[in-house]
Length: 160
Ligand SMILES: CC(C)(COP(=O)(O)OP(=O)(O)OC[C@H]1O[C@@H](n2cnc3c(N)ncnc32)[C@H](O)[C@@H]1OP(=O)(O)O)[C@@H](O)C(=O)NCCC(=O)NCCS
Image 1 (cartoon, rainbow, N blue to C red):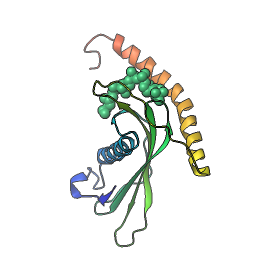
Image 2 (cartoon, rainbow, N blue to C red):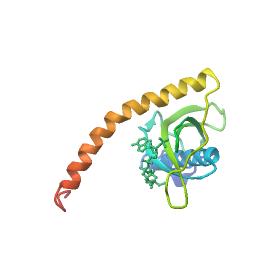
Image 3 (cartoon, protein in one colour):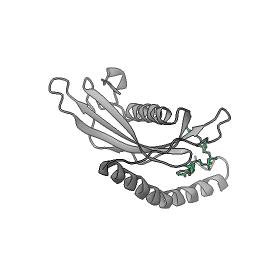
């Protein structure tokens, strides 16, 4: 996806709002997942989004998404955001993340997706990256589950 960073996306500091960038990432990742699977897809997991540098209003934004791993029903999509001043068109990376989508049927039940097979050395490196993230995520999810269980057990109103 390529478009202008419009004034409507501004944050309190005068640059592009992080929420706008997250919307673009989700939209581009969704289009990629639906395109690959040919099915409606839902977002299962958004991995750590890293904002490397701000995006200036009036700059050109480019959002790229690609499949880097498929399971049976899930697709791991790497999304990169770059931006450039339209006067020199020198793109610099601003954001990166990996999103997991699941293809679902009309009842919201996961359905199989076509297998994505790496062809180049770059592709194989991306599969390894996706697998390493999966391993790392297990520890993160264990921590998050512990907090969720604690919060669900807390009495109503305790969040203040
Ligand atoms: C996504 C959803 C359909 C998955 O349902 P589920 O019953 O948990 O699915 P399953 O246990 O059958 O797992 C489905 C896939 O997700 C993967 N998955 C499940 N939990 C996961 C996790 N924590 N991290 C990574 N992958 C996970 C499974 O490995 C499986 O992938 P595979 O078939 O490629 O092996 C369900 O959790 C859901 O509807 N979530 C809400 C989605 C949503 O509202 N998103 C925001 C708006 S789009």
